Length: 81
Image 1 (cartoon, one colour):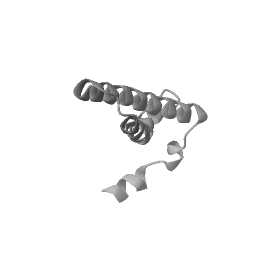
Image 2 (spheres, one colour):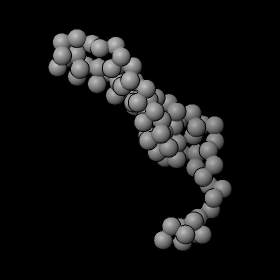
Image 3 (cartoon, helix red, strand yellow):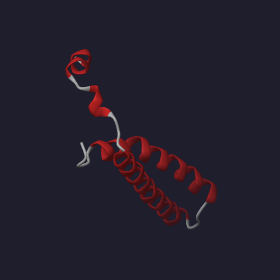
Image 4 (cartoon, one colour):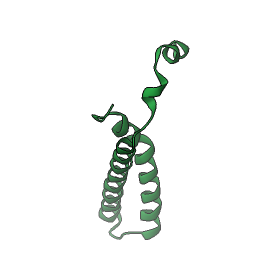
């Protein structure tokens, strides 16, 4: 099934423009920032204190997940296809 999909798809459509790349990076970064703030608030609410190393780890993981997971969806979902 995958071979059939690759055989019938136009690989040139998968190239990113600068606008699509920027849109993916911005969307992934915003998602990462939102998750970092949410997880920090949750930790502060549960423990009563903000643990800086935990916030740093959450930020790195959230930004990486946002750019890798949400970024391509935003990049290929735009109007400049």
